[in-house]
Amino acid sequence: MFRTMSVAFTREEDLEATAADLADRPISPHPNLVTPEGLALIEAELAAARAAYTAAQVKGSIESDRTAMARATRDLRYWSARRASAQLQEPTADDGGVRFGGSVSIEREDGRTQTWRIVGEDEADPAKGSVSHVSPLARALLGKRIGDEAVVAGQSVEITAVG
Image (cartoon, rainbow, N blue to C red):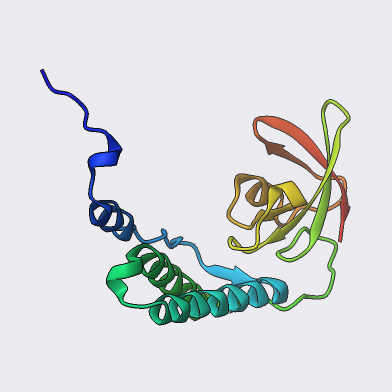
């Protein structure tokens, strides 16, 4: 019969070593398209990661705060890679079609309307009305025009506005 040991009897170093073994944040295989706001967000996150890395170094020895150093190093690798691969997409002339960086309003079969802005993966925030260009929603709508229909999540929607 095995008994679980209380956390009170584990060594703090063991917990730090586990926390310091953070896996890298996954990098998307898709092109890293960004709006000007998305590029600014990546640069701000990169600056914050650099500051966190410097702060973790200054706090003392790496052994004393391995978790903070591991997080900072992981974030620095991620945001450096995202900055290096960023492909800035300047706003283009409005040709009436749904496009990257633009917004689109849809009406669902049940009468609900929603408006989305199609942006880069790192700046997407569905709760705030923005979706990634690689999302199924964006893929279904890109290139469509007002009055066109698309299938989103198995339901037919109509494009009601493009901006």
